[in-house]
Length: 137
Image 1 (cartoon, rainbow, N blue to C red):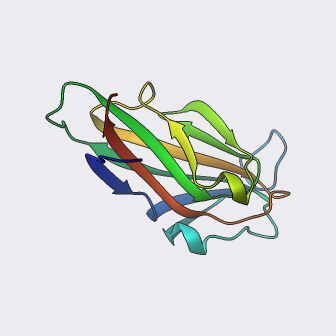
Image 2 (image 1 turned 30 degrees about the vertical axis):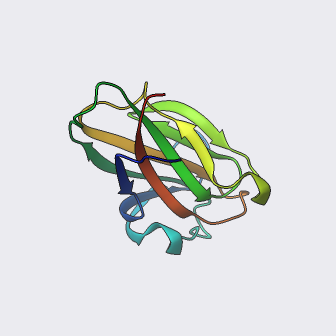
Image 3 (image 1 turned 180 degrees about the vertical axis):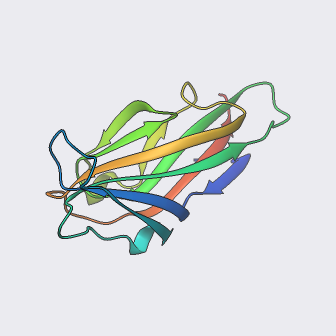
């Protein structure tokens, strides 16, 4: 990415909900605050997790702006959702990092939500999650 107009780190202040799995999540849920996404780990008793957080986009004085989600690494098979809409599944190797995903059509000015859904079978850890705004080419 060149000519970044904005880089918004998304490393801190996540909420994690852990589940045991299956279709009933009522009494199996546990919620935790994740201060640093790179330090997040699975709960051994609840192997399914969803991590989410809000982020705000302010207007940028450019006629055309594209927004990219960049992820240096994540557990394999992580589902990425923006504003509750599935965007992609993270399935890349070291040679593919960072994972670059055009999320322009999923974000809006103001408050947005990002969520990761992770299955307990997934291996890997989160590193370098950020939103980058670039001028359209």
